Image (tube, rainbow, N blue to C red; front, side, top):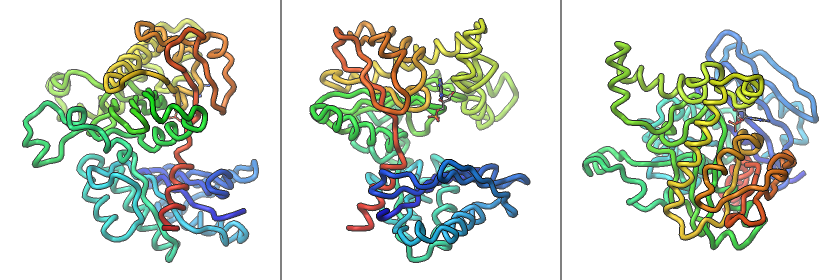
Length: 396
Ligand code: AMP
């Protein structure tokens, strides 16, 4: 086993972690601390095929990181190889165009981006500060979801609102899932080296979902905006709609604008339309048993995904590749089928057998022989990118 990296993804009530070694290629242990801040929080470790769960007494992020430290002390042969910690950070604003070795000025820079993602940013800062306390002397790196999209041209990232809003407040499109898109771009280049000089569309479809156009290896447009609410319909987010609706909902329901936004973020999307679940697998099962609202929700999801693939494709010279990734993109043959049906006018077409019988967990090509565009399923691996960036920055 060579140098290992602890990857931390700290949310407001959860903390996901993984330790990767051998240049990020080997996953040694992974786990999650859940329900942080509540009475019944716990942390689980998945190691050598076995899952163990430990109750967290004070339910804090600090307690969760302390338990990871205790676990490492019980596995000294893993602890001795730990060389750094990589943190996933959702919003890097315009400050961070790439990953950064963490020091006080980087922590301040992350905190300064909090206006756009207050809950996430507060959790990230806590996670970083706690990790610095519990693993003193271990170098730490921040990897930003927004960084990959800093290559967008102003024409794409500006909103058509008064320029002063951008100048004074930095209101613009930032885009997210950048770590996943960067991984997909690099993995596709291994599978098909020409792709680095071509036009690539990626649909990252999970509970959060977005599309990205990658022109010659660089992000040229993406569907999410100043926050992850813009663009596709998602598990519980509505995606793009007429902004006047926020005011209509708030007046009709006698709630504040923030409460209306909460509905658009947490009670809309697949959940809002199906009135059943935000989970694609549950909805597919319901659709097969004849639930028409589940089918409507899934078909709306597909139609809107296709729309935002076509939209970001306007920044490409040609659509040479289309990649599906994320929990839904990797696993739902139904949604891949319906999305590609909507893209027929772009001469994108999939091979039904290859789509239906694609092996789980590995990259595969699923386009029809006559398709202008190669269509791929590529499992994403954000932890690997975080581990590799961490190794690269600490060896610099
Ligand atoms: P993620 O946020 O990337 O973890 O993706 C979560 C989403 O992937 C959920 O909506 C799951 O229902 C969906 N998903 C995972 N496995 C499957 C599957 N086999 N078929 C359909 N959807 C799936």
